[in-house]
Figure 1 (tube, chains in turn green, orange):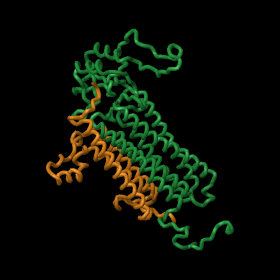
Figure 2 (tube, each protein chain N blue to C red):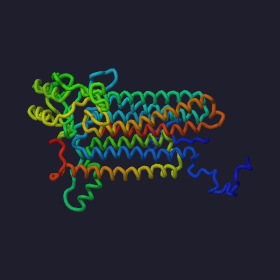
Figure 3 (cartoon, each protein chain N blue to C red):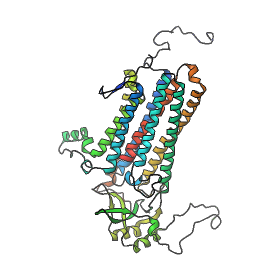
Length: 333
Length: 148
């Protein structure tokens, strides 16, 4: 080996390499560098979310009204319960990770294996939960009418619950009236062969309007937030007028173009930020699996140090750290 | 021993016998903070739904005061509590799970100061700009209209 490594005469000196000026190994230091830069990337995204939210501060969707679903509890409004569960799962998998690191310090192969396995399970549950959350968000629940200007009109009625008057949302499926003679979807075989069209919405605006006119109790809720911090509810005449004059498209659920919950920027940021975070969790799980097999094969036992577990642990905790902020700025604030 | 751990949190108020105990202790604390956040988020007490102070009126020093106290003047108390609790959680994740507590002071400062400075700068610039765009959109002589 000596013949292939150039001797610079600086060995043992301060700048000669082999030093640990910050008391951390090269690998851990590089992981910290990566984490700092990735933290800046995420804060860039979250700050951009803040920018757009400040720009539309009067009409931004209220997260409590968007994320109300919990698996197996269909039809109940339980804001935040499921996200809190996801947060807990991720913190829990951080704990098993740090226990794996600790077991690594004691060179306890069996325990490292067990805790790495639990960490992977936790990460998988989190990614799965996020997939479910996305699916629910994409499918939507009540549907809404989008206006010519891109605003969202939602529907509901006043109901009295425990002596208190509340606005309860109504799904467009429940009141839309079918109108004969609506246009059918354009397909290549029944129209221009070189033009495509996406699927049409389930209802047309006139079907919604007829349903609205027939049901005296239904009112329109706009996306403008009033002084009480709630969305503005229009009077009966205003409701009919808004849908008739401005209604353009019936939307259900959310994608990158339309969003039944409010401004489409909200959905865009939701997909982008939670997607980017979910991608980090997914890569974390993959890296954890690789390390897990290395632990089983005894790679680190032979190497005499479980530092690799510590490095992947740093990454895993960072992912948890980011989620704490995403949770606050997407679901709480 | 190669892996020394500082086994106390809250400046020594809570001491642990071993590193494992400390990890579980931190988990209990983080769960507790998350639970507070979720409960506040569900019930949204009315008393916390408004900012603590009203903006100062007047000249230059009023503006300066508004900037210095902006978190309590322009932010709902509830949101301020959420953000503070989030930073508390971030602190314990970094310090105890990522073992920042056991690293050298120089490494700690290198990571934390750089990040905190750049992130504060980014947030200030973007939120300031967002508020400005809102004012342009919603001014009395604004030329932007959504539905007509």
